[in-house]
Length: 197
Image (cartoon, rainbow, N blue to C red; front, side, top):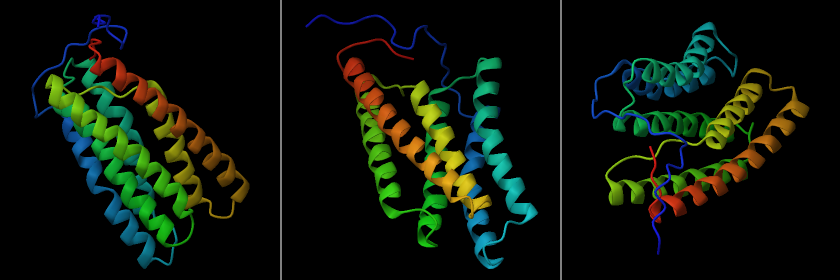
């Protein structure tokens, strides 16, 4: 079988082996947002407090900030490529489990998202095992995460806006499915020998 040597990410990116970078620390800090948000929401009778709003705002901004800093300072790292999506998934998992538990989001939606994430993480594991480096996230994956975050924010901050919830939920499912297919195709190409960042 011929080896595909074209970089499927378009251009080669310099990746470092550093752990202690500003972008990695920002990604790591995002892991600790979800539990205080859940606790404060529950003890305040499902009302949004200023502290919760600040934490959620930080979570959203930090998801953009870590990648921006890594690119601008040329500190994209193997650890960062792994930590950023893991922080996103852990934070989202806690928030969505809680929101399902209080009955604001259907269980099937959470199970669908979890099945997608588990399969993508399994693919990432096999890529890391074969090539000893982590594959970067793809654009459709990033877009689906952003719409997923919008859906959760709409449900959490505006529980009465059910029409908006339905639209964002349908959009999230569609984008998660598209990105799931894209990740599978990317996995197939990488495991066949395509160069990647």
